[in-house]
Image 1 (cartoon, one colour):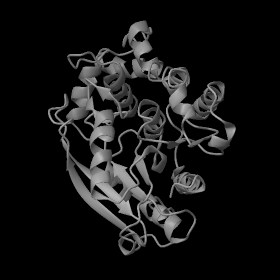
Image 2 (tube, rainbow, N blue to C red; image 1 turned 45 degrees about the vertical axis):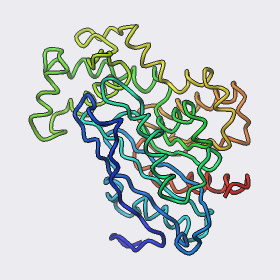
Image 3 (cartoon, rainbow, N blue to C red; image 1 turned 135 degrees about the vertical axis):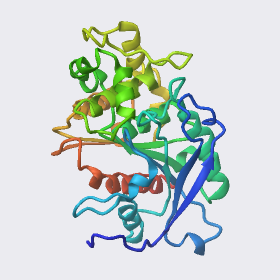
Length: 346
């Protein structure tokens, strides 16, 4: 593998979509967003053929142009995904790379008065936009979603909320089982906030005034503030932390609002939607820094408890931390496309 970009067998089309739903969002973030749409090899040669689509969403702090970033001895995912189709590992599909970045680092792909209407943006603007301009097979059986970390979370909850749009999903180390992945961070956050007199907004002002991630507090506090803005914001856009920033005592009402977004706890409420899925890929590293391997196990258990058939689920724990697992993405992409083909939907 050469360390520079290689020509694609398919075509990566770069667009800008103007979102009415994100216009005037609480953080003043752009409502014009980059959107990449990949068409597979042979797309232009078969003008009457329609294709399944896979929506690809990113982890926290991710934005769409980060797909151009590379790691030593690793292929960029858009190139690896192209090879999935060029090498015949999976039937052809259209890939949609969605941007849902916010000034706090991410949106968790939910609608929130603290960040904006990113769930609705994805489902009610991006999906119809793509279907109107590309030869997608525009129904749930032909559409899947995949992502890692916060993107894995989005890939779990979006089909629960909109089973009319998405019939398959892949979650790589997706946020789940919040008492393991989030609650244990609260004490760390309290310690870090001592430098800011227990005021997260004082930290935010400092963070916004200098080069990002040059203070030990930055990564933890950005995650705490950003997720609170997604899960426990008030109607006026103010944000409630789920713990007292000076003592660390959990605030039950705000914490419950976080738990309401835990995929493990959502599963019983959305059991019918989950049972309707034709494909569910779940994986995580056995040494995940946020215990998302434990969350993956809990999510799989809940799927079984609500009646999702074992032959629908592909589950694997593998040796890894939370980092460096991008090599798993082509595996789940190929599997999702193969599953759609096996069901006679490609």
